[in-house]
Image (spheres, rainbow, N blue to C red):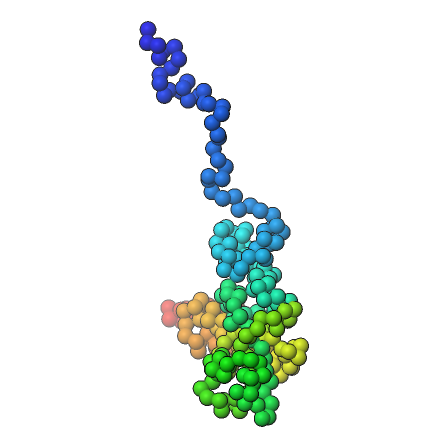
Length: 251
């Protein structure tokens, strides 16, 4: 009689059923990563990461994306490297938060009579070329047509404990978190920021309606105007007009 008949063929079921108890079992970490963490714990961790790592965390799963996209998490990651207390306002795109470099911040200098670019540069200990580049100025004479200059931050200590305001500067043609040494932006600056924000939002709505209806800007603007800016009502109005035209064409 074959000795394998008593104990089972080599490599058969009986051999595999008697595994060495000293051998380690399957490593639970060898499979896919378990991303299910309590939201509060995950938020506390992400708020301590650099912005680029927060952006990467948003790609792990839906739960992580929801936390990593939270405004408080984005703001904390953006502010922490420089000790900024808070940032007021919403950027045009989420990409604004991904780089927490000093280039994202600027100090606001109200231009006064007699100011010169070299004088302002000396006051804040920055280079004249840096001010001109940051403010999109071709020459020193550009200061006379502006009410304020954005001063690039050279010493990050000025941002400690500060409140900054996200603004799109129409002269500098850049969006930055602006620090006001006097405490907060003037009412005129706030009004201009609100106008730019409103225009930006209106443009996004127009683009959305235009793509949804597959029409040109003029047609999309017309239907938004007759619907008082309501994109859903604009699309319904367009659909009704299109249906009426099709009915007339079929008669």
